[in-house]
Amino acid sequence: MKLITKAIEKQLEKNPLYSGEDIPLEDKKILVKFFTPWSNWTWFVTEAERLEDDDWRFFGLVHGFEKEWGYFMFSELKSIVGPAGLRIERDAYGPPKFIREVL
Image 1 (cartoon, one colour):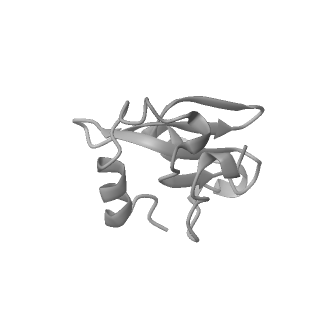
Image 2: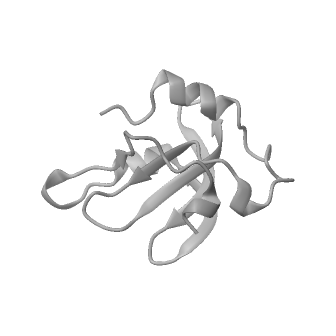
């Protein structure tokens, strides 16, 4: 499965970093959801910036050991390898619409 499709790219480009500073965190729209199929780690992207090297810098809610807001890189997500060679996946059915749905 492709982690970022052309349609997702368009959504990411429409929501650059810092574009939602006036929006309460729980009201932020989720653009894409990545997860580890072998654990409970999930990344909910709400803003993004394409970098010169064609990588992406994301901002969003990370649900790992705890739920916290922060920045993370697409290249870092792609580099994660789990048991039996499993990789990060994207929610193919579409993420929840807003962060308040996952808090």
